[in-house]
Length: 177
Image (cartoon, rainbow, N blue to C red; front, side, top):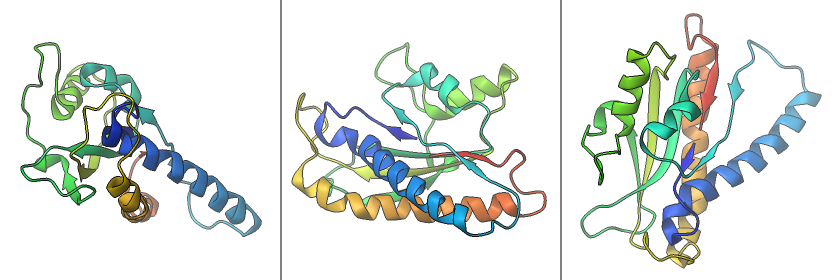
């Protein structure tokens, strides 16, 4: 799932990455159809998401694994620097509004409501400087780093697909990046 808003400069990098992944994955699937598939099928869905807080609940429900591509704010950021995070690395902090809840809080709420939530969450966190300039495209620095962000995401997806194909791997074999 690519999080962000592509109307706000580098904040849209997750959405741009998912668009590229969707195209490349579709092209690979056409190639794979010609070859004989082995093992159980793994479903991968690509989603662009500009939602936050509890609104994300409907987007992430029902998946075994969730991969999020989103920007992070760091002191002295290096545009496009990638951090691969696990759910346990994400702090459960309140957001900028009392109406906002974090991803960990959203997943906890879904579980409390009996909704199937992802068992595994990977976050491709991308440092950014240009997050609040309305109407700006991705910065040149972020555009240069986009191929690396896409390749990192592919690597994470490949690892999750291998896990899903193992006996007792991911239950329904559904992954959302």
